[in-house]
Length: 103
Image (cartoon, rainbow, N blue to C red):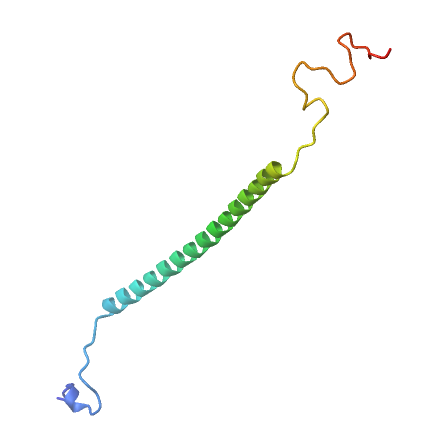
């Protein structure tokens, strides 16, 4: 009867053989890990892109509002001639009756 010991086959070291269920479980675990990492990486990349765009839009909006506020403070307003008179005062050259004094 021939023996199947590793000593009978030169160049072959003693290797342990695992059952098929272990190979299938290992393959399934590796595929599950790869799918999870792919999904997680894609979700991370999309969220980073979305948050970057939102931050840029918010920054632009705040910059625009700040620019408008600074311009409204710095630039002089256009006033009508009645806006800088005291309340209840008459325009120059008018009498209380509303007619001009030289008539």
